[in-house]
Length: 394
Image (cartoon, rainbow, N blue to C red; front, top):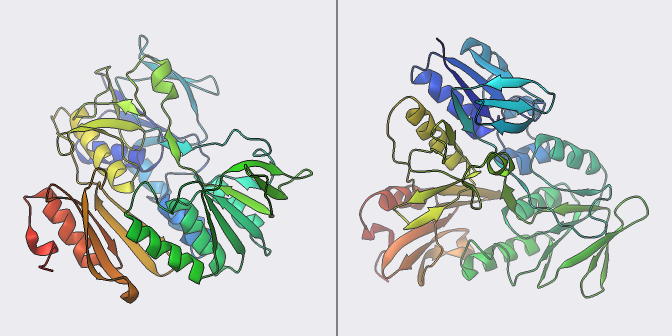
């Protein structure tokens, strides 16, 4: 009897999982369920080239639409899953249909962190996660706008760069003392602050939004201090939360992500999970971690497919990420949390340098600013033993 693997989620991880299963010789049925109305697409360009108009939607597709039919992947778009019946081994969709599974792969991703504050549901207040989000934002940016971005992380700064390039007024509100506060060293925060202010972005630190005010649409952001900042458009970019509700309601282990083992199995041996929604054990870092990146979505989905095919992978990657802001590319290898020392190689004034993060003289991570060679060296070095060629004397 033919077996069925159901994949919940049609993003990068879901699409890679389906592809890897077929590539690995899976002969059963593969059903991929996506809540959005589009085929699987790339998310990183959304806040960059797609928002700026350089990319049309079709350039975002991960695979041509014909790929799924050719590879016998039953892709159902606009099909949200409302529950998992583990005892009956089936998923229940929001439209009432039910699909049985022998194996289930959860690739449910993340969603933007919402701000439950007055006025944040007004028209003109937007998140940025999906293609539909960016389409709505692009439409509003067809005329000059005064844009307030709540959050000075990667998404907020990437949108700020695009918006300034299109001629909009931009102010970024960051509750912390610097941009990218949780993920980079102060020296790198200073570099990006200088970059953005030199292009006309107004950065405000140590401030928090209390409400959005407006008569039927966003007209101003009111801060907790009482200050009122007039605007036409508000982007909320305060991070993301994993979509774990389906897993939790089904009784699977969840802890800021769907808990999986090194082979991507959940607490139910018939159910696997991959991508941004998962938390997995890392011997490399001595703790469980959750990653939000294309690299993790692709590589963990490959590992999950391998496990479904009967192998025993051990997923413990060297994470890497990137961010494009104006002409500057930031590439990150490793995780820098818990560092006790940094070393900078190169001059920020030249626009090309890198920062190495260490703990007890052990390399943890490298942030490369328009310096691709150091990024590739870092990924290689972090995957092997300590190497000193990234840290020249002096």
